[in-house]
Image (cartoon, rainbow, N blue to C red; front, side, top):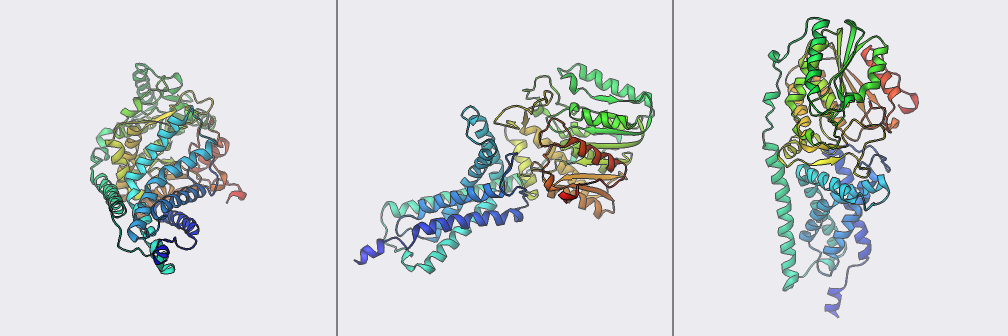
Amino acid sequence: MIEQDRRAPPPRHGRWIVIAGLAFAVAAVLSVPLSGLVITDLALSPRGSVSWLTLFVGVGLTGMLFWSLLLLRPRRYTMLRGAIAGVLVAFFSYPVVLTLADLQRHGSLDPQTYASRGSNVLLRTIITQLSTGFASTLTLAMVGVVLVFVLHRLHPQTIPRHDRRGFWRTAPRLAAALALSLVVALGGAFAVLTLLPLDTDSLRANPAASRPVVGYDEALARIEAVRTDEARLPLNPRCLSNLLTHGHKVERVVVFFHGLTNCPAQAAELGARLFALGYNVYLPRIPQHGDADQMSTILANLTAEEMIAVGNEATDIAQGLGDEVVISGLSAGGSIAGWIGQHRADADQSIAIAPFLSPNLVPGWANHAATALLLNAPNAMVWWDPATRDNPPGMTYAYPRYATRGLAQALRLSIALMDDATAKPPLSPGLGILLNEADDAVSNLKIEELVLHWQEHGAEVNAVRLPLALGLGHDLIDPHQPTGDPDFVYQVLVDMMNGVAPKIPESTR
């Protein structure tokens, strides 16, 4: 009878499986703000990003699974097994949560697109595991230990007897060794990636690299030289560097840098709107963009040095096109605009639109590690939309995939910009930031950090925030984006250029 009691499962074991799942899920949700990540959607995310609901459900289900697998049998209730369960929950929750987010967006696992969607989930899992996985692993391991401790206190009969033999004595040790190895591997990978140099010294400002033009004719000649070079490349005609000019130097010129994988056509409608207001408008092409073959892999050759060079060249040219020079850009182009604002006093205004300083998937403190990982790992071409493997209708000029190496170079530029913004005051007299609270692609916390660094040096920053309630996507400029509102956003930009407070709908504040 005594032996039978010892082998009996604890009371309400099924309830404890649910409690464990809820504990792991709550811990994951509470650790999000501490990690520096931002999740904007409560339950539904039409863009397929992680919502609070997908995070809670994904971690909860994974927690229930591994708690039951490791602790279902009698006499398995040890703190070591609780820690092992937590480690496994942390490791496998990443793909589960990302897959749920993908299902939420597309509604089903379409076999025809499963491979590309699965590859996208796998890549995101690897990046997050190697950059931040150690933190979540340690957190959930502690949760597992606490769960077993509480279980022992409430149900003393679950305390194991040390009379196990054979497999049931060896298996926990093997599992513990594997879990410990996983924690050490993730922590070691993060340490190595954090210590790897990114060679940002070559991205420092070099006054000798700038050659501002002295008049309108010279500006036209420089643009013609750019177009001559582009004519030698197999580019989409819509993606050539584009100048909208009134035929002479005017009061204001606006330069706009497009985002990663897009091209000058992204801002064709915005450029026309600004031109109609009397401005000259220059839309330069960032190198490695605009290939006529939308499936080209040339974006993997992009370098941060090229991004700085095109930024400086466009700013030099703009001096001959307008008395007041306004530099702007979206995402990676926003990082270029921010870099110009930091280093060029002849940029009268610098307006960075949702600058890509860090991906929203990675907290700011892991930005260096994520960048080092992408720079040193083999390049991968990743679909923006792995389900359709295509752009929104009408975007025949942009790449439907991004290169992880090109993405890493944009991040390398952002790290150089943040380092310089921390160390010294910006040179542009007019700094502006347009931040989209609903943006699930870039880290708004990192953007706020840039604003803070500039303000700490005494600079005035016109920081405009588009409310979360507007539900705008990352690409605020291209009129073909289904999550955009170009008429509203264009007017906000014009107001920012004119020093007028943008009119944000009252219902969204």
